[in-house]
Amino acid sequence: MPWALAGVDLGLNVLEVGPGPGLTTDLLCPVVQRLTAIEIDPRLAESLGSRLRGSNVDVVMGDATAMPFRDAQFSGGVSFTMLHHVPSPQLQDRLLREVWRVLEPGGIFVGSDSLQSWFMRVIHIGDTLVPVNPDTVGTRLEAAGFEVLEVEKNSDAFRFQARRPSLAI
Ligand SMILES: C[S@@+](CC[C@H](N)C(=O)[O-])C[C@H]1O[C@@H](n2cnc3c(N)ncnc32)[C@H](O)[C@@H]1O
Image (spheres, rainbow, N blue to C red):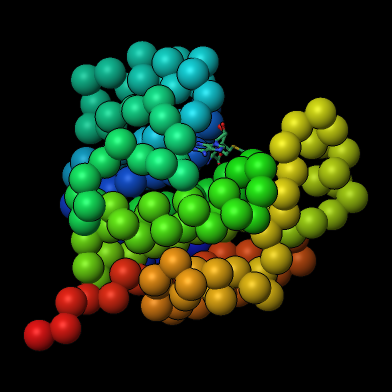
């Protein structure tokens, strides 16, 4: 997560997609003013929402491929180790378009995910695993409307930084 966030200004009102149990949420919430986390699993959403009640985090139970948020509502967005849990490339692309929609012009979207590996296949037995190819994620982000700032990979993961282009003046 520090790798994905390096040098990034997410602004004051940040969206987190797929917080799961909230390990990443716990690291993000002290460094942003307002955080909204959307989680599709009702049990995880409920437990994270209860744990963070009264904090600067709102947890919303919902599907990030069809988000219940206004256009341009957020100053920045993040997605950590979750895209491979979205069950098809088409739904992953829909999620990217949804993040674009709810970010304000100029808003930054950063993320990271694991590379395909034997280890990933083993730990996902019985679970969704649709790995994202780091060699095509930039094109997919562009197709969703983003300007790609960076895609970088190491031996087991990749990160990206992208921006919803500012409105032309
Ligand atoms: C592996 S966990 C990652 C949790 C956290 N971001 C982290 O890095 O520790 C992925 C999470 O994404 C959630 N998720 C999968 N598809 C989703 C969707 N369409 N909308 C919202 N959350 C989703 C899963 O339920 C799961 O909790």
